[in-house]
Every structure is written in structure tokens, then in C-alpha cells.
Image (cartoon, rainbow, N blue to C red; front, side, top):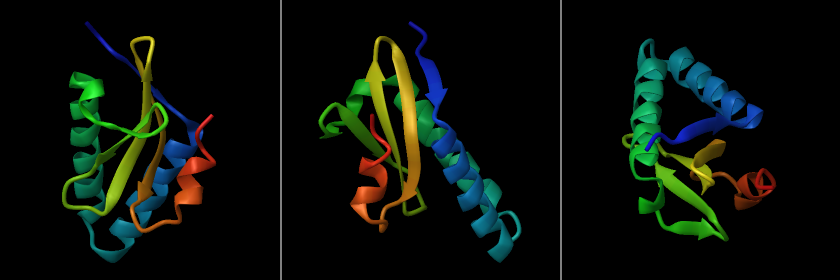
Length: 99
């Protein structure tokens, strides 16, 4: 069963900003970041309910080798990603993104 993937505009912005930050410091590090985030998202898509609910019905998956988490919701056979945020950020930042 295929799971639909939906990115919020904010999540897309998160990815671009993190990529730019890593790439500005070390060439190729931004690409490594994107590869790790993609692997995390693919894991979510394979088994979206394998990550425990984190806040209500919303879930969080941690990105390997980087201090980032993917915040998402799984409902009606779709994964909606609301943010890809640094884990040291103020929790209010990701909470304000959730509908």
C-alpha cells in the first residue's frame, strides 16, 4: 500500500535553510544532510506508525548523524511533514506548526 507524502511549505523552508547552513560551512555536508533526511522520510513512509506519538497524534523521527527531527502526522494513508527542525530549538517552534 503506497503512502502519499505531503510537505508543508514550512518543512520545505526548513530543509533549504539547514542545507544552506551546512553547505556554507563544509562543501558536501549539506548534501549529506539531505541524504540522511531522505533516509529518515523513507523509513517513515515504509512504517509510518512505527514512531510513537509525540504530541497528540503527531510523531517525530530523528535524523541519523544530525541533530534534527522530522515532525509529521499519519492519517488517511498520507504522511504530512510539518517540520524538519533542529532538536535544540524551542518546542514552541514545532508546536505552532501543527494544525
